[in-house]
Image (tube, rainbow, N blue to C red; front, side, top):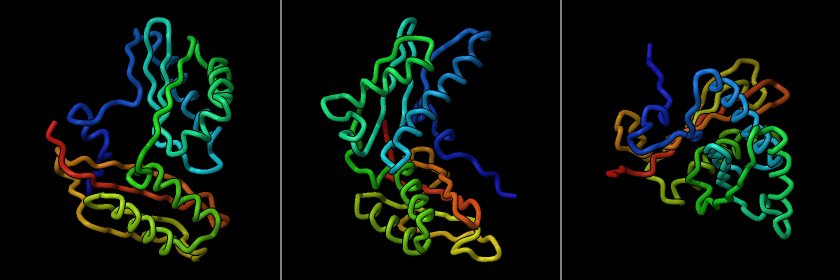
Length: 210
């Protein structure tokens, strides 16, 4: 059997970092972890209409929670005159145990974010697009954006087929065993009438020497 390892967790502390950064005593750990999950889910749900959120980072200090939202469309998150951020902040403070500060960072190349690419494909599959066309176009756009390699895998009842199957598209190389390789990875789900279709995306951005 192949031993599957998440490419992001495999590279933690080599050149990738945790999305949640804080320390807590044992008795508070579970409570704060659940709080982090709820904060993330709320941000994702608020902008679920189209894939715009690439990453949500949470940092905690003694009296403040800093949430950094990496997004492909900063204008959508910020809203007119900053109204969107103010509204989001008040919603998140109802969930959180501490005051919240929100930072918005724009993702310059959305086609290089595995999460945005995977969610975009899932979005197309939910709108009944052909899976081959969706995956091939996404792979081509990612390569055009400057990636060294991309691998996209879809699994489930593709095109409403009677039997579930797995299909993949590979462009360039994706060296999963090289720790220096900067590989972005994400899994998304498409809720189709025939059932759930899983979408996995690996994007190889080149070697890191830092």
